[in-house]
Length: 473
Image 1 (cartoon, rainbow, N blue to C red):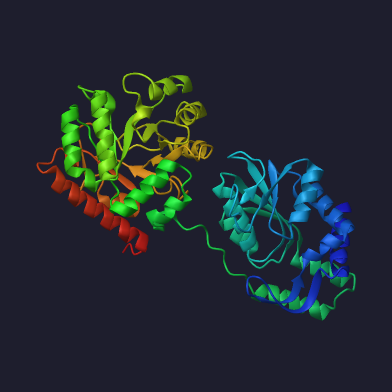
Image 2 (tube, rainbow, N blue to C red; image 1 turned 180 degrees about the vertical axis):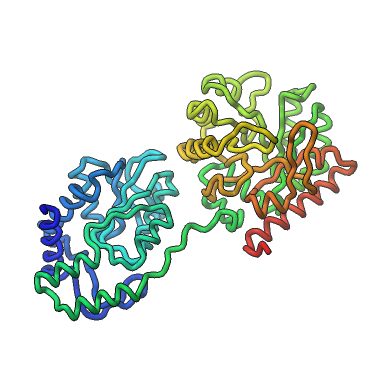
């Protein structure tokens, strides 16, 4: 009963201060409406601000778990500020435009990647304003999955937000507000009927979910990448028009260097297994780096780290291979937990990258969907370290700033004697969402490696351009 009394008091207060208006108006979403809400005026009425804050605290967010609050600019900022002080939670501020100087931040405040942020908004019609804030928070690695609203206009905003994985809670719905105003003789039954008819017949336009990463060109995805190596790879692919990674599983350094002399201009990435090279030397590393610079490709050491953090840190930075010195990125399992990423992150100084193994292409592997999901969630805590995922499925992750690296590709489907399953370029790119495709024996064992590399390069790039066109038929 106390809650109902406070809601009635809020509805009548909003009407009294002219925050609710009746007539003919146009909303931000371009919809004509017989009722309009101008909650900007509440800043002049501290008692109304206090009432809203109390209602949000006592009823709307009582079960919410969050680390920060963030008001949608600009009307909700005063409410978010009061709520932050009341609940003793930090507040973040989203700028509508990034600063052109200093830190150039869009989100102001202190936070950690993976923190949960509660969104505060005044009125929701389509939910587009909430999503603008949600998207900017998510780009910073924050979790934004819940929004509390003063008033829901009941025109599709709740469904739009739900479609984008944002749960909405509202103090007042339009129906509830109209009912209170009628009961207290603030508006006529006729006006209430007009508003109800309007609610039934007019819905806000759908808020489009974030664009599917597989439809975004590499050069655009480079702008969304947090990891320096991912950004570099996207740009290399766009410039060279190749998404081919060559796996040089050869045991002779001379053979590897000779092969790269022939195919270097056709690849964006070379994948090595440095510990199988029988004549490894520092001069080999020097020559490998020179070729990478000359032909503009990056180096991936497929080490598949899987030990405790301290050991991995030593494996990465010490020993005869000293991987950190020459490899732009490495592969790693997530099995040991966050310690392995923390070790690699501390050792890389933000200049290197990691492809996390989320799925494998060999038959009978023990990776489960739950393991894959946990791997992706773990990676979210290290956005500046993670280049992407070694995986087979386009739904493994959604972040367009990360790269899907897919091995096990040949021009024709096949399987070897050791359980390695090979898929075609069309399948892995068009159906499975691969960005960079790893080819090994299909090129290495060819009689004319360069000619075969060109065939793979052209085939893979043709599949990619078809994919981003959206015309998959």
